Length: 245
Image (cartoon, rainbow, N blue to C red; front, side, top):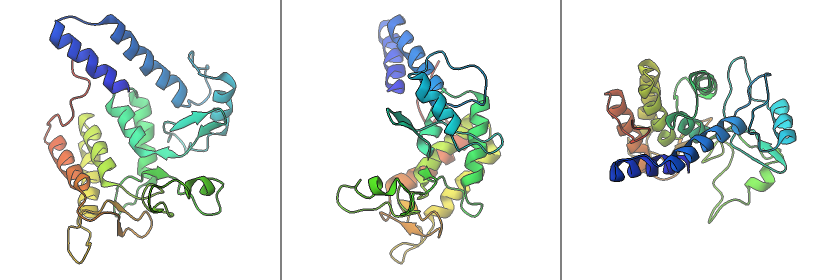
């Protein structure tokens, strides 16, 4: 939604040759709301634009995700409280869309490094995994269209996704973190090279988060696209039309 506003603002500028101040205000306000409501800073003053003061403070106090300077953006909140699982794609996009500052980006980078496998550095869709004994399992097991896919360490329940990692590589390269970008691109290549249906380079939809075995759809286009995105980003190319001046 934020990026749609940003794009509309840029289109207006190109077509009319002038800025739409109302759109600019909406972009700035929405960016501010995301920063204030989805990032828990240690201590300090309360954000100005909290949606709900009690909800925010209870959420910040209960947040289990801090390990040293590692932290991440909260995925969602409702009247019952915050959800605390790490949503990898959301955390990558909040950096790509320039909502995050450098300190927040660094904290997320450290958390991602902590949760990724050294042998196959590919980002999990969500972390930690929901197990059958967890209270969230009851809700998770009824959330599917045709067949249940979210077994522990599979699909969105802790499965590892090349597609998400491709966006992360692009973000790292954009920030000049070439060593780290190459590291995660190598993870994408390792995942994409896994054998499926007796053929090498199966380009699996996801990888099992514990066994590191391929899963989901064979020859998934977005898994292949992740490698292409990462490669071109490391060549210094602008792979996404974001935040143009």
